[in-house]
Length: 396
Image (cartoon, rainbow, N blue to C red):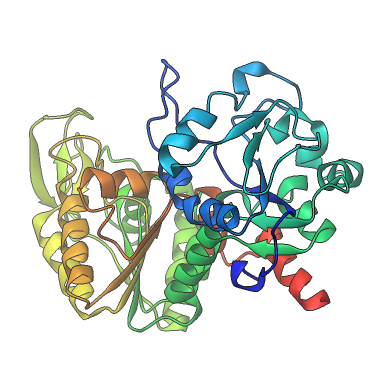
């Protein structure tokens, strides 16, 4: 697809930029994480320096097609100015024709204030493009799994390009599963396999080793015949787990399951626990983290890997001491990245939080802030807004 490298002469042109500025905000209205803002800075500054008139489109929350000012983006310009170091104006309507001078930037109001956005209504797409827009730049990977007007629709309506953040994201994903350096190891954790069946079915045909952790691993251990006491376990998913075991064997993918675990009577931070074999979990105890033996086994696997794809924690990382497994593996992987021996591409909300908790989120090769889009990519699905950018390039 075309990137900003292909966008030569934009001086005086109106560039519609789709960003994902759906950032976390506390009760006082303060933005608590500016990662998504910071990552699109390169695109904003580059277009500004080239003399483009930059109109930013984004969503915030779920106003459901109504003008609900609780979801207004009007609080953001001052935050954007601080993080980007450039002036940012605000327009209270995403459909207006912003009167900008060359190099000026304006943030348009929430595109989800209109029903036509999520429906990708052709009339709404035409109004967004409006005849005023000369170029469309998508720099919102985390919204690119949505076939919305401001993601997919505009890519068909205007000359379309990938922004710098989107370009970096796609390069990282290609590095992970497109043409990765092998051996490739996937770490998949979290509570349930029912939410990640498509991910697991895709990964076993793409990676060399699949490491499972969290409550998800319990379901596979149950399918393998283990009695897990009071642990979280989707027993009704046993057949699906067995199918994944079989598909992995056919594909030559080794599945790693924990051999030991920290098991406690209650789901509570600081509670007492025992390290037990996964084949000997007491009936009144629940698995809350992987054990020391499993930690060392995983390190051994990662020590021979060249690429890791990571989605989901290995235990209840939010509570000490059940964060030890995830922390230990994350810190080991980070050290291998620093030494140049390993590439780690990670993503998903809990994954980002877990790596931040371990103090290594900035030490990985690439950490995606996308949730649903990252998961759909792991599932092997085409993302509508990305496909539209690629199609645009083919059509031209």
